[in-house]
Image (tube, rainbow, N blue to C red; front, side, top):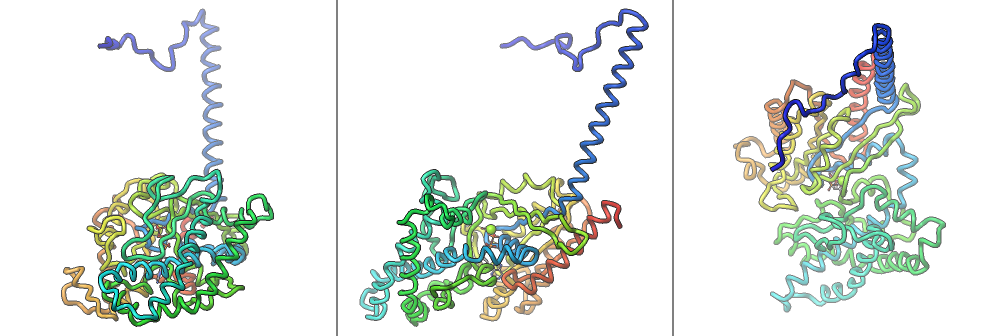
Length: 462
Ligand SMILES: Nc1nc2c(ncn2[C@@H]2O[C@H](COP(=O)(O)OP(=O)(O)OP(=O)(O)O)[C@@H](O)[C@H]2O)c(=O)[nH]1
Ligand SMILES: [Mg+2]
């Protein structure tokens, strides 16, 4: 065993000065030390001032939090649409392959579901369904081809992406969900598509160009059959039997087939908001604030993170540096379980996450904005007869009506926050539908007002 150091072995830091030769040397040494201290304090003050100055110039830092599919990236898109509409519009074309991928995944999901069904009752399959299954088979290749393109898998210097790590294959479909698409953080899928489109023909090979054209042509040629499959009563019946509601799932474009497969299709803002790509890894987005106001030159810095369990450990790195968090709770998910763990109810998971965030000491002086999101789907669920109190018994026999359920959930979220928060804080809560651009624009302007008034008062301008 190594001998333990005695207290006399421990070297003090800073080391004591050498003994002074005489009184003059001592005065000189003290003078030097005082000068050094003054210089050091001046540097500290300058660093601090620069930090504060940078903070004032930067603008507002927002962190989007919430479970997977809660709507974080959709809220980010709304900010981009509000404050940088030209950039948003300029990128519209980049979303086309994602929307096509969402669409073909929905079709292939139905085809796979039919294939699983068929061995048990092959004779029940109609001639029409058999024909559709045959004519839509090329969409498997289209899915694979677009997936390679948006995941960067064609690029020789990048390994294949999966959520759990690089190089492992993700399963093709969740048993109940169609349109999951993974993206890479940092440069992301937009970067891959830009690279392909760039004049750098070296990056976009002739083969890839042909693939792109071929995919679009195949989709166009399949459009009528896709609609025929989707509207086929047997298909609707099968999905209903399995309690699969594709139209309420993310990335649903089966009602827009004719439009989105047209040769000159350019995604609309509404299409872009409804498109689904799962975020992997934190992304930082800078959006200029209103250029016609006092905030000229400042930015919204928005951190968009992945919400699935494997991504949550990456959230904390942003906690000590943000102005506000927007926490999204998708309240329509009261009757669903997590994709990553089917023993956990999604609403219960949102409560748990919210308590964890509310109680975090690093966030004690951060503004909290709460979005109870997906109000439109909550409304549709309740109107279709799904009983909220079956999943939340504490709701007892209160009315199974959207506004009552939303008010109840809002009260629960506020109460949970007040139980856990290290100090009292006002929660800015909103009932939202993040795919509705006009109502979300109003919410964003309210947030802007609250946060900027606070920022100005902190910098003594107000
Ligand atoms: N109907 C409806 N769909 C919504 C709403 N908010 C988001 N969505 C859709 O829900 C899907 C998931 O939203 P995202 O913004 O990708 O979710 P996320 O929180 O970023 O998910 P991760 O990146 O996996 O953490 C997208 O297809 C959105 O279009 C809403 O209020 N109503
Ligand atoms: Mg996301």
